Length: 415
Image (cartoon, rainbow, N blue to C red):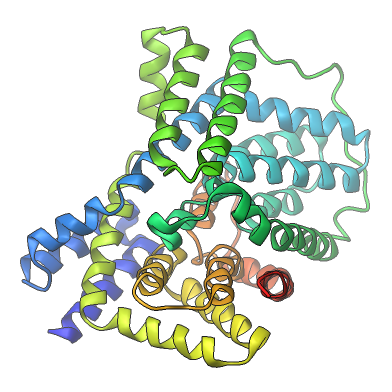
């Protein structure tokens, strides 16, 4: 029975990553979860409990998807990208830096999935206007989506998964992760700039006229800023982020659309609702493999890392989880690690290293994170193709030094 659990889980994860028959990722996750129940490998009640554990994540994702679609519909991301092109004043290198800064802001305050899904098309349109090579700028959207995803608890749904109900309030979070995040952002920038150095020696055309934002776009921008403030306050008081995110995002959408029915329906229809059953299916799959011994295996591995002296233990934990994330995607690895951390007494520096590994480690391969998979889908819609080998070549240069330095910073701060 244990072997069957692992086979079904492996098949479901492979389906999510490679999408045979071009079926959506959610179908494969839900099929795997359904097989677990039908085959009696996990009781229906336990599967329901596993799905219910993700309630805060579902609410958070729904709110973020509402905000991202509102921003896309009202041209907020196009406006930001156009501002970057104008401010570059003909310099491809300056444009690279400005788009990187925009990517950081979007990831920090709207989550890494928003960067991958919505900022990517806007950046592609902007660099087309600038008549410069698109690849360096498109890589920014993929890599910064993970590199900046632990600045705040709201920057990555994986943060909620790893910590669960024990997620630290805002100020303890910043005390632990702000410096490692800045190190990660800086190291990723330098590595990306180095591998793109030949493409950034040219010029970038500056479009005539200044970028403008419609009145609805301005309302959307204020709504996004208001939502970010609400989430910072909720995080500061240690309140679960899901419900505040959904309420604030709903208020922002209603205000920006002026309660106009057609606009509301348009936003709701464009949201990728399949993300929710995808995450729910993964919760069930992880619960099943936990019952088959994965929880004990990951837990014992983390306890072993805790016995290794100081920084070496933190590095073993972060790079170990990073490898797992690139093999099975960081949502399942985050669920496994989060479940293990809630059942063992892990040292604080090990828990911190695990989060860094889950968030930053996936920058090695296209299979590493859901955000990177969504980025590839966004590229295909724009007629662009980046192979797994191209991404892996960049990932080998970008990810290891960033993960090494960020883990070191987190371990030193935990002393």
